[in-house]
Length: 171
Ligand code: GTP
Ligand code: MG
Image (cartoon, rainbow, N blue to C red; front, side, top):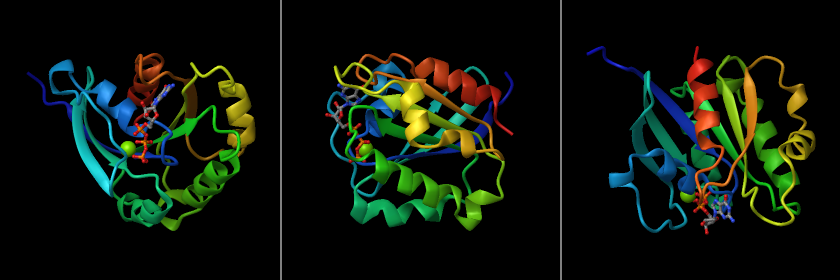
């Protein structure tokens, strides 16, 4: 059969936002981890969609590891940025990290797609994806295709919609 196009995806966002849980859900059931632990440094995961073969760099969001993120900007073809919709207190920190990312020399000039997951939509006090996009000023992103999906990574809800969008917006 046809070889699927290989793409590198960088998965970013604050610690505890649900990055590893999301990536785990996207993997085939027989290779999914049963227990998710906070990521140390980063993990590399692979999975396929109907037309693409993904290599995902699942980065740690802990502040002490965030300086690792930029080393992978050059080789990335897409970004998944995960937000904990229930973490109102740290939304400003998430925005700071997003702004730093988007202004970085290796990202600013690239027209790569950015997929946002407003994750943990199941939490009683979760902000809507519209509210999250307002808090992060996503309307200011003019030079890259972007999209935001509400998700519940534990149940796997919203993830396929996001992946479909990413697949349709790869350069
Ligand atoms: P770091 O690796 O430290 O950067 O964190 P992470 O972004 O990879 O978060 P991780 O996937 O480890 O999830 C953190 C916690 O949030 C875990 O206890 C998950 O079970 C929980 N979690 C993830 N997604 C959801 C969700 O959609 N809803 C709820 N309620 N909890 C979630
Ligand atoms: Mg993790």
